[in-house]
Image 1 (cartoon, rainbow, N blue to C red):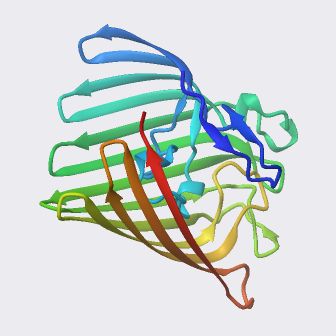
Image 2: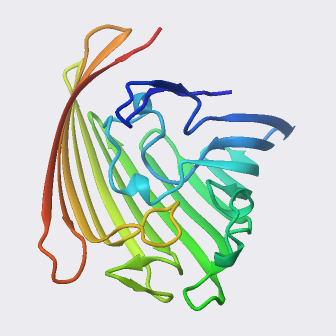
Length: 272
C-alpha cells in the first residue's frame, strides 16, 4: 500500500493522503520468473516516476501528462535477468469501466504490453496501450498509445530519451474534432553527476498536437516546447537539496501567438 501525502494545490492550504496516484495491490509469485499483480499500481509507461523523490526534476515535464500515472487492473509479469515483459488488462484512470460516459464509448477496458531491458549501462522500454472509444462521428475507434524509452550511462553521465505517440479519436485541437490525427511528444533528459554529492540535470521536451492522456476531448495545445535545468546537492544521507528552472513556450492553435512561462523552484527531499 502506498498513499502519497501531498499539499493541496487548489489554494486551500490543505494536505491530502492518498487522493492521487495511490497504490494498493497484491502480487503472487507463480514461478521463479513469472508473477501476477492485481489492484491499483503505478503505470510502467513514461520515463518520469510519480513520486518526486524518484525523479530528478520535482516538477514533471510535458511527456508526463501524455502517459498514464496509475492503473487499476491486473498484469502478468515475466522477468528474465535483464529482460522483462508485462501483459495487462486495466481499468484506466477515470476511463474505461471506471468511467460512466457510454456516449463516447468510455466504458471499455484498456489492454497493454510492455517490453523492457535494463543492465548497468543500457536500458530501454517499448510499450503499447489501447482501448475502444467513439470518434467524433459516434463510430467505435481505437485509442492507442506507443511509448518508447532508450537510455545509457557512461561514467558520471546518464542520458535518457523518450518518444510518445498518442492517437485519441475524440480530441479537440485547434477547435476541430479530429478522428484521424495523432499527437506526439519527445524528451531528452541528461544528468551529469560531478564530484560525489552534486548533480546537474538538463531536460528538453517538444510536442506536436499535444494531447493529455486522461482527457477525452479538448485536451491540449497545438505545439509546446520546454527547457529545464536542475541542480542537486546531497547535504547528508537524509537530506537532498534541489533547485530547478523551467521555461515553456506554448502555441495554442494555428495562427495564435506563442506564450511563455517560466518557473523556478527550490526544495528538499527528506528520508526518515
